[in-house]
Length: 319
Length: 315
Image 1: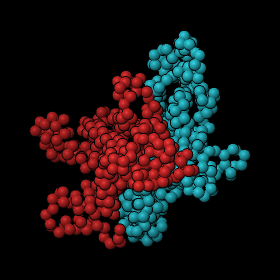
Image 2: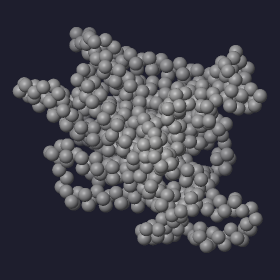
Image 3: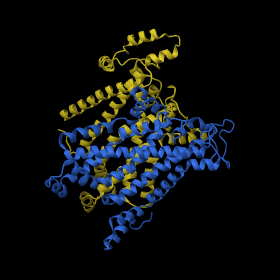
Image 4: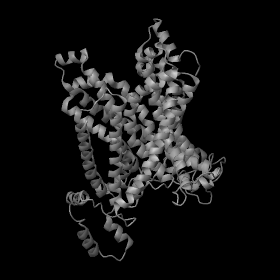
């Protein structure tokens, strides 16, 4: 963060010097120039490893994350409970790690799901144009304009039994994860759809697409082989940037009691009782929120860094 | 212009009609129905009574028929009664819509008042220390969970310092004392909104600063301030207005969270309470009013375009 020439430009200057760099090397140079993105990537990798080893840490500490122990509620940190216990006497650290698994899985799955649907609709609209395009984009604008959270609250309250889903699935503990991912994908595809449509529109008139058409390539082949690889960069950036927003949305719904259902922990539902806790033990209200905050900001910085690395135009507007 | 307005309003009503059918169907899929709620509160009710009540309220008929019946009376201005409050739905919702508009409006104006100068300042000195600081704060604003931020504000200003009420509404006796209840919700919603606006404003101002008309303005000797307010701000506002229009739905979502935590009697909290408390009429009409509000806000932002950019005209 110095006052000298921006590091990204320095990387470009080195590039102009004639050194034969591969596309991948250029990417990494630009990415490493964004220091916050690098720190974020390291943080996210560490967090993923830590949450993935939740059960290992659980057995190392000799505690059970789901065990309710009403004689040992709201304990201060100790050797056995490094972050103390919650209002039901459960180990806070272990629950935070399991909650992190849930939040990360929901965030990544829903982001990828949204990207797939958004890409599909965006390429169709951009390639075929005309009435299909205006219909799909009107629909997209309509979804974007909706008050998403109230709508999600109603959707989250829908009784899955009445939808005719098998009752053993509805009763399973992980159903709230699937439901959460499905709901977020349902409203989350719009950003990628608009981006991909725009990128496809500009690709459609390029010579290589024209050539493929002249050679008799089918429309699905042109879209998959010729257009899709060329619009991948904005998709990657938008998807990374969306993970943070999705984790926020999941935490809000879980906080309101309509997302991930206890006893399955998520960072959001660990804060459901926080409003009562702030008068007695405010620390319990701080940890989950801090983790959400750090994870979301890390995904946003990572997306910002990827944008710098993948899209040279973004740097021009940055500086 | 009039034709454009007419087309936009028709579109908005079309969206509302689709939403009403969709939400009506979704509410039919929510657990239980009004009769289940009655059975729950009166264990002595026999199955025959329940069946009779279902027929009386028309709940035994197919959902399309029920929707058309609802639509018929809604078009005549009858939106039914609230189960939780025993009052006509609109009598509950309209005053709360007013409260939400106050909360959203104040936060929106405050966010703009801070974000526009901050974004422009950052744009004039890109990559400087202040720019990096503003950028960091903008990212923090986007990334902080809004409900957690609200809780932190309560911990700081209500629990620790004891300066402001932790939630609720005023009692309507002393106007200025009542406004104290607005302070924390407005701060929370402003912080949740401001990050995005700063980033858009900065990007748009950087783009505007590079245009030829800025160089021309400099060449003819205008001061930095004149260039910023007269040329950069006006032009940068055009792309920012698009994004602000799209933020209306987000702002409403933020208001819902803020209202719920601060027990502020607005639309968002009412919609949440009605969904959780099986108050079907209020949930349905509340969501439609929320949709209508965001659609109208979008329309207003589009009209603001013509004022910001006279090159655009809606024919």
